[in-house]
Image 1 (cartoon, protein in one colour):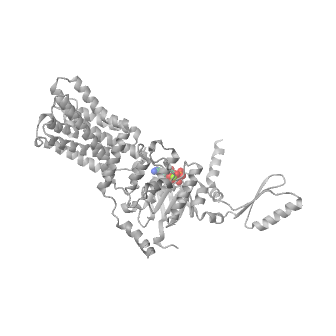
Image 2 (cartoon, chains in turn red, orange; image 1 turned 60 degrees about the vertical axis):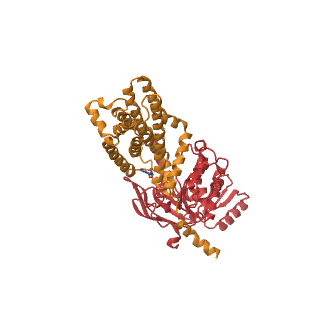
Length: 300
Length: 267
Ligand SMILES: Nc1ncnc2c1ncn2[C@@H]1O[C@H](COP(=O)(O)OP(=O)(O)OP(=O)(O)O)[C@@H](O)[C@H]1O
Ligand SMILES: [Mg+2]
C-alpha cells in the first residue's frame, strides 16, 4: 500500500447530488504520484462531476478528497500553480493569438515552461500567430492542452482531451501524455475511447451511474470482470463464425484442430485473443443498451 | 551530491519562489485587455460611437442655445462614464462567463482580484478617453470652454467609475445568459440616463422623477461633472453628491465580490 505522501489524489466515499439527483454515489479511488489514471464511462456517468470536484470547481455533497495533500475546495494559489486543467468544455478570448495566450498564462505560474516548447509538444507549430477564432476545433483543443501544460504542473486533469481530434492528432496527443508520464507527472484523464485508456492509463476505473464498477490495470480487467481470459474464434464448415471462451486455449485448440483435421476441414479465420478493455467495458455497461433496446421495443 | 541537491531543490524551490505579484499580474491582464479591445474593431467602434453620436446630434440641434449645451455636455459625459463601465462590464462578464473564460482563469494561480482589476482598468481607460474627447469637443464646438475645475472633474470621473464598474460586475451576476444581456442592461441603462438628466436640465423634471433620480448615482455624477465642467461650483458644494456615489459604490463592490460566479450554471 502506498504511503499517503506518494498519493497525488485520494477519494473516499465521494458523493455529489444535484437537487434530488445523485450523480456520484459513493466512489473510492486513489492515484499515485507519477501514475496515469483513466476514468472511463458512458455519457452522464459522473466523470466530469468527479473531476471538477477534484479540481475545486464543484463542492462535494459528502465524502473526503485530497489532491496533492490539500482539500481542493480550498484552492490555495500555490496549489493551483501545481495543477493543470483541461476542462471538457471551455473557451478563450476570440481575438487572442496562440503565442500571446500561452505567454499570458505562463506569466501566472512560478516555473512556467518555455512557450515554444509547449507549442512543439502539442503540435501547434505554425499556428503561433493565428487568432484563436481562426483555429479549427481540434487545434483549439490542442491549445487547451498547451495552456494546461504551460505552467509545468505536477498534476494534470484531462477531461476528454482528445475529443474532436483526427486520428493523427490523437496519436500525437498520446505521445504528449506519455511524455508527461516520463517527466514524472501525474495525470487523471477521462475518456470514452477505450483504446485511449488502454494505450495511456496505468490503471482505469469504469464508472457508471455514479458508481465505480471495476478498477485496475487495463490488461488485468478482463480476468477480474469474470470474462473468460481467452476468446477463440473461427469459421466452421458452413462458414458460420463460432466464438468460444476458455481459460485453457491450448487444450481447446488441440481439440478443435484435431476434430477439423479428422473431418478434413479448415478452421478459417482462426484467432485467439484476450478480451480487450472494450469487451469488458461493453459487458459491464451493457445494462444501458438492453434498457434502451427494451425502451425501443416498448415504443414500437 | 547532484542527486541529493536535485531531490531537495524541487519542493524547496516551489515553496520558496515568490509568485508574480498581484499588481504585476493585474497590469499584465490590463495590457492584454487593451490589445484585445483594439483588435475587435466592432466592439471598439460601438463603445465610442454612441456617446459621440449623441454629442454630435444634440450639438447640431441645440446649436446656439448655450444653456442647453451646458446641460448636454456634462450629461453626455456622465452617460459615457456609465456606458463604458456599467454597460461594458456587465456585457463582458456575462460573455466571458458563458464562453468559459472565467472558469479557465479560475483554474490558474492568477488571483481573482488581479483579473478583475485588469478588466476594470480596461473599462476605465475607455472612460478616460471618452471624457477627454467630450471635453475637447465641448471646448471646440459647443462653447462650454475648458473645465473650470480639473481636480473636481477627475474626482467625479473617478468616483463614477468605481461606482459604475462595481455595479456593472455586480449586475452581471443577475443576468442569466448572454442572449438576454442586452435586455437586462438596457432595462437599467435607458431609464437611468433618461431620468438622471442626461438630455435635459434635471431641475425641470417633475417631482417624482427628481426623487428617483436623487436616489440613483448617475444624477450625482452628472451634477459633479456639471459643476466641474461648466458651472464652476466647488467640490465642497457637491460633497453630498459624492456621498451618494460612494454609498452606491460600496454596495456595488460588496455585491460584485459576493455574488461572483465564474461558471455558467444557469440558462
Ligand atoms: N450542474 C448540474 N446540475 C444538474 N445536474 C447535473 C449537473 N452537472 C451534471 N449533472 C448530471 O449529473 C450526471 C453526471 O454528469 P457528468 O457531467 O458528471 O457526466 P460525464 O460522465 O462527464 O458524462 P459525459 O461523458 O457525457 O461528459 C448527468 O446525469 C448530468 O445530467
Ligand atoms: Mg463529462
